[in-house]
Length: 270
Ligand SMILES: C[S@@+](CC[C@H](N)C(=O)[O-])C[C@H]1O[C@@H](n2cnc3c(N)ncnc32)[C@H](O)[C@@H]1O
Image 1 (cartoon, helix red, strand yellow):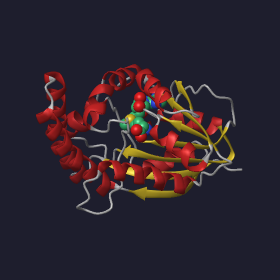
Image 2 (image 1 turned 90 degrees about the vertical axis):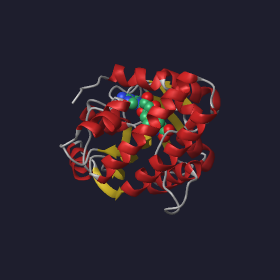
Image 3 (image 1 turned 180 degrees about the vertical axis):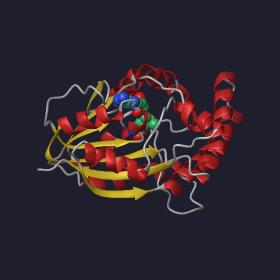
Image 4 (image 1 turned 180 degrees about the horizontal axis):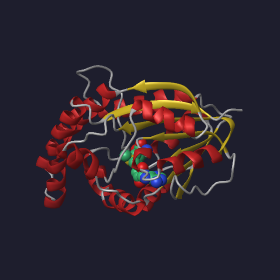
């Protein structure tokens, strides 16, 4: 296992922004979709369904003050602000993504920083949310302590995240799932709950969503192949083809139980 640093992760997400905008989603969405059925191939609708599902699970309304940790290009927190009128802020480790978010969403404030040292005062937020970001944090307990700190008593922590269901990770999964995005290690569904409880959270709900992550990579593999065939930029084409090749290995890793996805709601006791 390679132990990636926050700097490794930051560099990866800064450098790959144009690649991801080129085929994954041109508005910067970069999270797993919840699909309507096995034949559904509409990634963007599925990704928006994930945001709606998480917003409902979190119980965010116009009175909420929300922080999205690992907000990327800002879509989820922008959506929450538009849907509910809540006060919304986004934090991300990638300066490039924060810049993109700040240019595309008004009424939301974005900051460059890490989940492990958040630039907010204690008890600032009623809700902390996150989509597919916290798995990348090398010191996960530290990020949980920080999320706890910035939440008000009674506040909710609602997020989706990638899971490492087993400690036995084979060479192909290590290469195509973990090292590909500078991910060192993660929690199983049960291990995640233990870690949240250790940080003082009460678990409100947990969902295993493996079927949807498999479908996300099935759909995006095809999109990457189609876009690779249509672009004249050879570097972009090579990157998309490498991604498409990784998708086959990602499917296999999910089937072998080496990669998973879950959604959690936890509460800081009042
Ligand atoms: C897969 S992307 C998801 C982005 C966004 N949540 C979305 O739904 O489109 C993961 C994001 O986590 C951010 N990230 C990784 N480590 C982080 C950390 N320690 N603190 C804050 N953000 C981090 C990355 O820069 C990247 O933007």
